[in-house]
Amino acid sequence: MDCKSAERLLLRSFDWPVEDGQQAALRDHLAGCPACRAKASQYGLIRDVLKGSADPGPLPYFRERVLARLREQERQSPVRMWLKWAHRAAAFSLAAFILFGAGVLLFKPQEPLELTQVETLFLRNENPLSDAASVLDQTRAEDKSMMLIFASADLARR
Image (cartoon, rainbow, N blue to C red; front, side):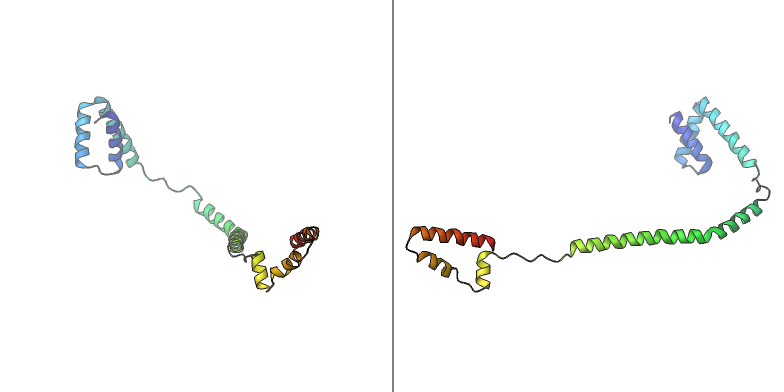
């Protein structure tokens, strides 16, 4: 056992019981180390002085001062009560706001899906070939081209 461990164990032995093995190791170390033996005697003197001293009594007018402080705190308690209530109300409001925001974000309604051109034609019961038939019936190529250009512009606006 080294001196540092012995000193730590010696100080611990003043407050709590030490195991028999540790107590024997401490005794062996103190028997062989004069520096630790001197520290042990000094710590023992300090402990004896502290044990022998009487408990200090309360200061003069201690009871009156404590009662006066208690009365003063009772007078101030309505303000403290309102402050405690205000803190709790603010915390509750913040929690409600966070829960409401989370509910709005998590349970927002779905946006309507945009239908494709094929779905639109099917649901409206339209025939896309009727528009194409009038274009294909044209005999002149220029008329066909012009009708296709205007038809594509018309579809782009829809």
